[in-house]
Amino acid sequence: MKYATEEAFVAANAFGKGAANTAYAQYFVGNSYLNPLTDPQVTALHLSNVTFEPGCRNNWHIHHNAAQVLIAVGGRGYYQIEGQEPKELKAGQAVCIPADTKHWHGAAPGESCSHLAFMV
Image (cartoon, rainbow, N blue to C red; front, side, top):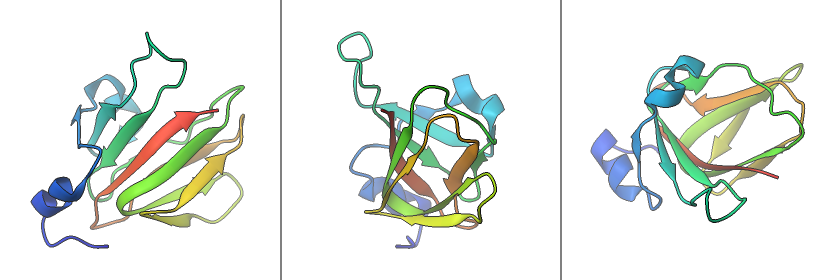
């Protein structure tokens, strides 16, 4: 769903936009925001809502020894596994990126995107 304004997108984000993702900014093209939903000192599950401004994406990367699950919760984005074509990711869709697989994910051009991210 495309929102009329960025404010409308943020207001519809049930998991919250979070704070500017400055700690990981070097790994992104564009601006992203991070809202941790679990406390890593309490649980082994690190669940976060990541919000990407329009056109923002992270760099190609690999998660060693764990798969990454992305659950789109707002807007429209893309992900790409090395050697494959980019695939659209819309609210309500989920994808599991296998461990040790080079990939990227982020927002579509002109649209923000939020997804929950965790490792399994």
